[in-house]
Amino acid sequence: MSALSERLDQIEAEGRAALIGYLPVGFPDVNTSIRAMVAMVEEGMDIVEVGPPYSDPVLDGPVIQLAVARALEGGVRLADTFRAVNAIADAGAVPVVMSYYNPMLQFGLERFATEIAAAGGAGVITPDLTPDVGPEWIDAARAAGVDTIFLVAPSTTKERMHLTVGASTGFVYATPVMGVTGERATVGEAAERVVREAREAGAARVCVGVGVSTREQAAQIGRFADGVIVGTALLRCLTEAATPDEGIEALRVRVRELVAGVREAR
Image (tube, rainbow, N blue to C red; front, side):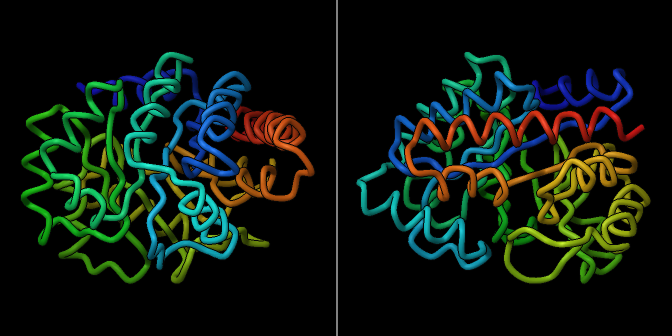
């Protein structure tokens, strides 16, 4: 059993959903982004998604796109991702990487998986890769002991749902809205339906990313999902702050609110 699966089992035994937070590496600079990730862990974040910046983040919303562009302008490198992973593991949370496929391919799939494992990373979320076209990545990840986490959505057919669930380890990432990432005013009914369909296809753990930004939304999803994934709302704490220190303090406050949400959900 992987470190990610073990942590999710521990959290389930506590009677709650996991809180999973995403931040890109390098915004506003590499060191501050890593400080921010560690701060999230200190405030109770269970799992941290580390985002290697990519020049064509087509599935991300405007807040993440702007931050990623700034990070690339600042000279962030893929090696900085492994630094972040190591810092999160040392802080006591489970790190996973959320990466577009092209940077992984350019770096080398076996090398990418090996470097993540060596840094203490547990898995990789690949938003633009599906299992049927990614067997080389699945093989490389399995060899390195890294979980492969694929996405399902409302448009996922029953056949593809079984394919995706079968290829996913750690958890299945359910995105119950079509389009790019970003905060949403409401969760909507599709979230629970996609979780149910993934479980019917055999998924042991399903975590939901749907633009969560409030304690109430975290509690709502935490009632039926194994994990609540938050990204844009966390990054906004850094993008809207006057200084990096103020951004990290705002981030701490937001994480505490979300932690309260998942803990009061059930």
